[in-house]
Image (cartoon, rainbow, N blue to C red; front, side, top):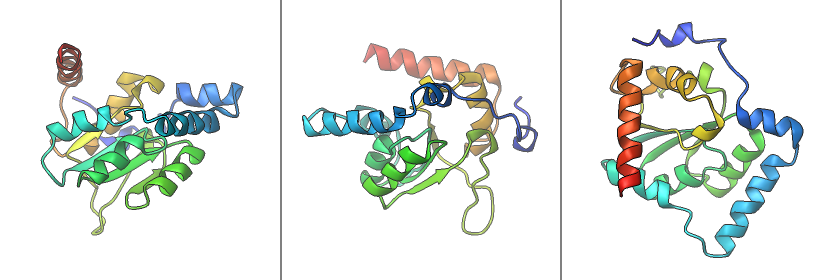
Length: 173
């Protein structure tokens, strides 16, 4: 079983995004501009959101982990889900807040994530969308958000098996 969240505090690792940003300070702006260009060209930017939406009941609580500009979380919010996005890149979050003001966008590290609801209780989510996963260490990511799931803790093997199943089903579709 995964350790309790309080044991994960201080385990933050530099992400691939952060490493790349050190060598390319314009990385965030380039990313923002690239998706603005794709949007202007009429590209379909909502495939991931449609996929996640199809799996959820209306009004699901979504944690958009590594939300970036909020492209996926913003679309899920437009589809009636309660979205909280978290990211380490302040420039990307500023764009998310500008483009999707109706959602909650938090500047924080997933390793130290301690979101609270209005009553001060740990906030739980129906689903965690790790669509920024290419930029993080997968096992580290799973450890860091294991306490945010409404279904509670499960073994590393169960999480990885479920992730593999979803990936295989997605590829078969």
